[in-house]
Image (cartoon, rainbow, N blue to C red; front, top):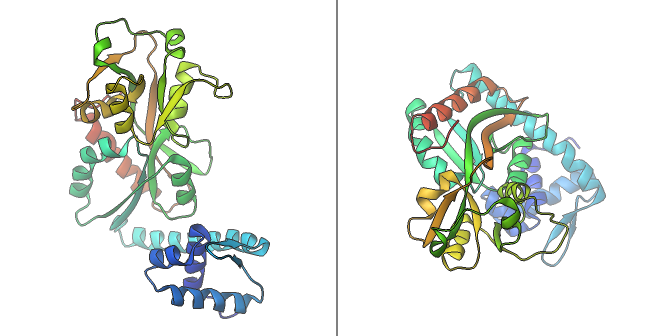
Length: 303
């Protein structure tokens, strides 16, 4: 196994993640034949196959699953060596790979990107928008430096840096603008529009409404907040959205925005990163800049 290379490890991990030679080759910016050759050389060096080839997809063998866990550890360690070197050169943020959940990205990023680039001239800012489980996985694998998500994250491997707390508001058709805001018991009986499974905001909305997800009920789903808002405007039902999304999503929709009375539903947004990341102190600086950027903008619901 003396011929194993880090390049092969990168190609192996890309193929394991994508499950398809064509997509993996595109991710790695090489041709599919070149990727196939590198994987064959890897398997020849190991003396055992790491993939099962199908007509359309590939999947890891039992050995491949175990091998991948070790490869991910190696790749993460190599990435952290690069981070350590950047810190030693006092240039920790020539590049920042930042993940952001979809219910935050369109509304928060325009507020903070300018301040980040001003604080770190020449910063190569790579944004990855995805749901929390995928972001935490990529963070753990070293493919992201940090992620902005809803807190808390129940994983002791991550450091959390709170950024803001924001309320949820109720969206109803415009025709209901002058009617009383429904309480939780009434809300449970209404047709509630939710994001599809995988979004943490969906879980937060269900928890506030006290809805038992194991029991069938009439709910409709959308893939984005914009879709939910337009469905409400069409009179299909009601939904909850975070306050930061209101100015953007309700501009061209016939909806009524109603704050909840009494105990208001809310969420905490923060930045997380691996505790083992050598750039940890610099990421605290990034978190502080983002927090200050949001605090200086009165339209941001921050407390």
